[in-house]
Structure formats: C-alpha cells, structure tokens
Amino acid sequence: MKPLRTLFLINLILFLTGSSLFPMLPLLDAQYGATPALVGVHLALLAGSNAAGMALAGRLASRFALKTLFVASALLSTAMLLWLAGASALWALMTATTLLWFLGGAIYSQATLYAGFIAEEGSRGRSFSLLALASPLGAVLGGLVIGALIVYLGYGPAFLVMALLWLAIPALVLLTLPERPAETVQSDSPSPGRKAPLGRAFPLLVVTAILASAAAGVGQISVNLTMQALAFTPEAISSTTVVSGLAAIPVTFFAGALSDRVGRRRVLLLNFLLIAVVGAGLMRAALLWQFWLGAAPLLVASLVSSSVLIALATDLLPRPSLERALPLLMAAMTMTGIPSSIGAGYLIQSAGSVAAFAAATGLALTALLTLLLLSVLQQPPALLIGPLHRIGLRAAHPPV
Image (tube, rainbow, N blue to C red; front, top):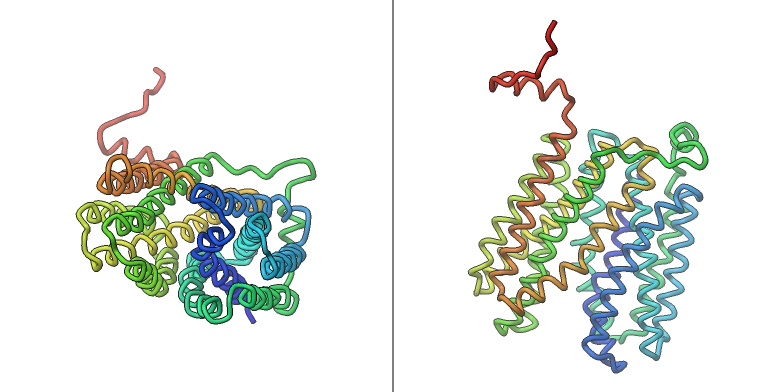
C-alpha cells in the first residue's frame, strides 16, 4: 500500500469518528445535566485541544520518529474511547473527549507532516487534497455507520466499535508506512539548539489562512443559525450537511490537482472569491434549496483552502521548517473556529443574518488581498522592476 493511501485511511478513521460523535456531544452533555453554557464550554475545549495537539505534534516530530508518534497517539486514543464506553459522569465525558480531540489533532498533524515530506513538488496539491477528502467522506460514512450504531446499540457499544476501528491506525502504520527518508533527518535538519527559519512570507501566509478559515467558518455557522431562526426542522438542517459533503467529495480532490497545474495562488484566489460571492448571495436566502446552494460551496471552499494553503506552505518553506510551520498553520486554522462561532452568533443575535453573511464576505475579500500581498512579497526584485519601467517609473540613480 502506498504511504499516501495509508495516510488517507488514517484521516478517514479520524473524521469518521469525529464527524459522527461531535453532533451527539450536546445530547450526551444534556443527559448528564450540562447547561447550554457548559455545553458551549465543552465544544470550545474540543477546538482548543485539537489545535494544541496539532501544534505539539510539530515539536515532538523533531525529537521522535513519526511512526512512533502515530502508534502512541492512536493507542492512547483507543484508551480514551474505551473510557468513554464506560463513562457515567459529565466530568469523565468532557475529559475523555477533550483528550481524544487533542490526540486526534496530533495524529492529523503527523499525517500532514509525513505527506509534506514525501509529496513531490508537482503533486502536492493532489496529495494534500486527498487527505482533505477524508473529511467529507468521513462525515457521510460516519453519519450512516456510526450514527446507526448509536441509534440501534447505544453509546457504549458504539464507542467500543470506534475503539476497535482506531486500533487499525497502529496496524496500518507498522505494516505499511515506511520511515521518513533518512536524508531528510540527517542533511536537512538544523544544528542542535537552532530552529529552522520560517521566512518573511510565513506570517502573512498564516494571516491569509486565518482570514480564509474565518470567512468560511462564519458562513457555515451562519447558515445553521439562520435556518434555526427560520424554524427549519432538524432533518432539513442536517440535509445541508449531507448535500455539502456529497458535493465536496469530488470537488475537493480535483481542486488540489488543479492547483498543481495552474498554480496554488490562482486556485486560492478563485476560492476566496467563491466564499465572497456565496456570502453575498446568502444574505437573502430563505428557502431550503437556497441554503443547500450556499452551504455546499462553503464547505468545498473551506476544505480547498486548507489543503491548498498547506501545499503552498510546503512549496514556499525549506524542508527543515516544515516540522514547525505546518503544525502551526493547521493549529491557527483550527483555532479560528472559536472566534468564528462566537462572532457569528453575536452578529446574528445583535444585527441579523445579513450582517453575519456580510462579515463572511468581507473576511474572504480581505484574505484575497493578503494573498495578493503575499504574491508581491514572493516576487524577486528583478521581476518587479520591469512593470515599474513600463508605467514610466524609474529608480533614482546617483549622479555620475
């Protein structure tokens, strides 16, 4: 089995579990007596721990082999699922799920790092998009399989099945995943005590990623909150998730392959424009099909943005920097979910849905501008002098 396929299966297990379990957590919290405010705290803890796991994985990757980290994280995650199967108190539920999301973030970060090391320059978009494809596919399969297990068998047996499923991760890693290339460790790593440079473009790339993630996140959350405000049924609201996931499965992969052919920045520019246009269109949405048409491209844009931005970071950064840069980039995009959720809810409550969708549009256009600025910073000075000459500008020369 090729390493990339193994990484895809690992990600599929992550999203199969997370996508099916996350919507059920508020119901589980309520069964143990949690207030709505405490449910919100629980969900915020999950986002924060997930991002922390991603960031920590980068530090550990410079000290331990990635295969060792994969196996250790997966076995600990299995233990958390076994704990959840027998949990009988709210504190146990919150603690186990927070640790599970932390470990899941670490595994996802490790998979992305491994892909960054093995992906060839001309196929990075396709490689990272294949990993991102696990998200919508896992959501669809999780809703059908794990959701059915919860309905017919209950939470305890469902957690046991998920624990068995997670045991496949260490088996896949040990049996099919080769070690990271030796020359990467020996020749590319900086000397002990020194950190590999990230370059001047990386901070702006992180800002672009945060803005793009916030734009898509505010739009997606606003769709759900607006549909609730318009008294749509739970079945109608969940149908937007199914439609979005089905639409995202083919588009996400081909968008990554397209970035290999036409360039990462062009695909990202089109992606940010898509978020802006959809956000503007959703300002007047009131019918179910209109929310379908809005939710699907927002999910596609979110997945394409994350995968292509990671591919772009891999293109721009020297290989020794990837262990620091990629986990930080992914953690930044994940943490954006917290202020996006709070901001969208506040805007809808205080100013209405139009303001929330307008904010999503504005964030997308700002991300577009920062991406253009990043492109300017990446141009060699010689390439910038030509256009200045063509418009009649000259650099000042000292008198001879």
